[in-house]
Length: 48
Image (cartoon, rainbow, N blue to C red; front, side, top):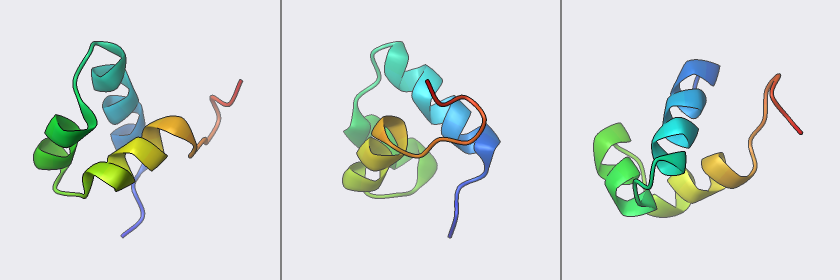
């Protein structure tokens, strides 16, 4: 399913604090590759 902007923001915030993609995957119930893609690419209103 599609992640909500709030979930994406939470994932990115945790990753910025040093949480690994593998740990994010466990916490959010997705694959590590999905967590990586979300953190690196999916943008909503906060794109640089």
